[in-house]
Amino acid sequence: MSTMGQTAPAPAMPAGHDMSTMQSGQQPAAAGQADPHAGHDMSTMRQAAPAPAMQAGHDMSTMQSGQQPAAAGQPDPHAGHDMAMMSQTAPAPAMPAGHDMSTMQSGQQPAAAGQRDPHAGHDMSTMGQTAPAPAMPAGHEMSTMGQMPPGHDMSTMAMPPDVPTSADNPGRPPEMPLPPGATSGPAHAADTLFDPAEMAAAREQLRVENGDVRTTAVIIDQLEASFGDGEEGYALDAQGWTGGDINRFWWKSEVEGDFDGEVEEAEIQALYSRAFRPFFDFQTGLRQTYRPEGDRTDLVVGVQGLAPYWFEVDAAAFLSNKGELTARAEAEYDQRITNRWIVQPRAEVVLSAEDIPELRIGSGLTSLQIGARLRYEFHKEFAPYVGLEWTKSFGNTADFLEADGRSSEDTRLVVGIRTWF
Image (cartoon, one colour):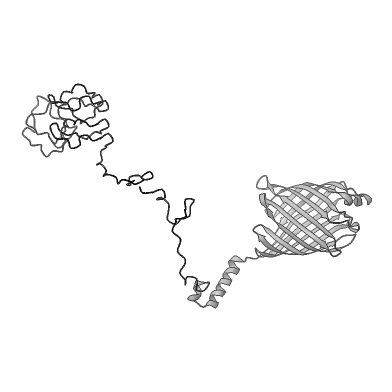
């Protein structure tokens, strides 16, 4: 009968009990006995269907719930067998009075009728299938713990040790200082094991090969022909550098002229450039300018770099060998339309601290130039472009130009190439 099971016959239900939800395996009080649960609300306990009569001669005291006896009228193949060792849940005795069993789970059995109830007066409403927990120590604060005893402040228990957080307080244990001899050795620990001179040479070689890479670049930003209201002309704007990531020699050159062979203006700058910010260089040096009206040699001080939102800026002040102070600022931005088509807006403003009649330059805002160029990159190093450029002179500079018979405002179509190597 190792695989058979049977639920003991259910006795008559005592009056006054609502057994509609009594769970399987729970038994009401035996008939004829005083009902210890008279007046109890048993509405949440489940009811099992009455089991058939047990076969005579079988000890079913240890038979598991759910096993069925032989059908009535059939010979019992196990008649006379001792089933005392068979796994079985004993029939449920009557429930003791005074217990709230409304939430008692299936498988729990009340005390047998007629026996002294050791738990009389206990509230078993929240008891599950686990053993009752031991009494908690009094005076402990358990608001932030799970199954830990309350009074202990566990609010910071989950924090890693010695990690600064906003929950830190002055009561945190101070960090211990370094031992006195911790910083008494050489700057490079390898010098204690190897020849310091050889290690210094190795570090210098590492710096040269990995931390002081020297580069050289030549950028022809504009090599173009211009067509507009005035004479057809050409322009060249080129620059380059050689050096490391901190210190560089930088050169710049600009040339403007007409196709009839006359050079209106040409300049060359030789600059020392030093990075003072991750994207900006401080530059200083000399500029030599050639004009039909007269040449100038200028001291140059300026900055060049990449401003926020990817604006390339170049601003410089020039002090000539005749004491004339001028300034120029340029800004441009590459707006990528596709991987190859790029629009480059550009603006340039020129200022002067005084009138320079010899050079046809007035004080204040001298000129403003705004343009845009659309280029197509066949390769990153080579891109032809087409664009428009508008130039306007102001103040005395405009007066000087008009006095010479030239216009103070000009709009031109430009066609050229941009390349670098």
